[in-house]
Length: 469
Image (cartoon, rainbow, N blue to C red; front, side):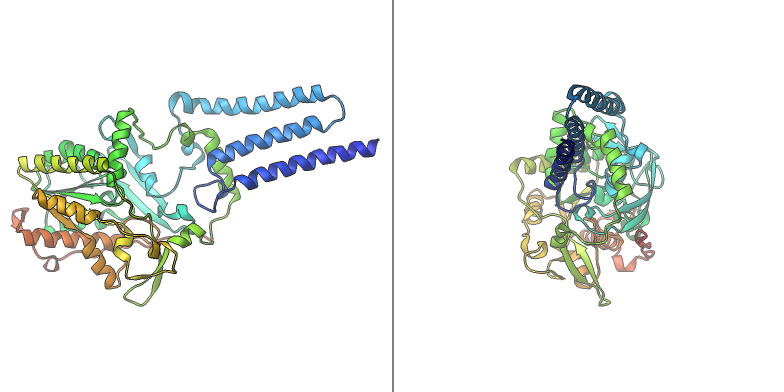
């Protein structure tokens, strides 16, 4: 009898253990970053923890041949106490919007997105804007590590002016204003290496950097009217990223329509105690990535520079189609931006920013069936260029200058990120300076000079720092 009871108990324990193991095995995702133990999104991990606790409680109740009622009460009380305690910790999130990322030091990621979310305040028109005179200093990774790339960490130091933009001083006037998203803010490179700063050197002009991460065309229009035009610029340069500016136009409309103002992207789940407690546990128990995941290998390609050295670069996302509504929203903002700029006497120039593959294709090697060989390119730069010409809007596609640099063996994008590196910023600045010179525009009282005749200080070092092995 005793032997049979022991066998039954062990059968229950083994059954519950197998059920828990099966639960975690069945819900594991592909090997990727920003997931718990690199396999579990926070929501799935939380449900798995709950399921595991319930299974353990069931094993405790069924582990006795008698007294089921007493054991059931004990298990219920213990589970209730655990969930009640977690609920108490979640109350500050629900009631006051508290974010446990700071308490656990577990931001949702450590890429450039951290810069655009950790130093933000809500704004009724812009949705969010960086806190005036705030600063971020720290280590970040490229924003493609989410696909499973062993992370390279970069030291960044980003400071903002009185309006929350990346300028060293509070400007009261500017010869040129540069408006755009994260490409213009350029948190990953030193301020002196941004396209705005490099262009300022080439033009001998004062240029205001009015770029802001996660902005779309309508937000950039607000920036133009609220912050740029009061600086009395002679030229407004509007940087249009072909990767997401059209979708950002629709996203902004949705956020404004529903009254969303995510100063920090994400809702309750992104800020919750449970999420960040599990993430902290995962970081304590998970070693740094050393191998490339399959999703990253699909995006990998080899680029050989002018010195004959080969580096692996990672592509970001394919260029897809856009909807008529996205196009209408974006072009309406561009048209109004042109009109208000001209009314104040400022010239208006749109600079197209391409995705990585558009620049590197033809100068990289990758196996068949990977992104570099399978992804197709859309006709957005041609369509936008034609739209601008039909409306007599000055337009420059920076793809040509970037492609020429790549063909010469110069890498112009950060290997594990969607954005330009310091060389990419300088290439685009030189292209804009040539365009301004060829157009005969007058900036800062003189006609823009040829970029080769302008003494430009060397590009700052951007040496990555790898995590200790």
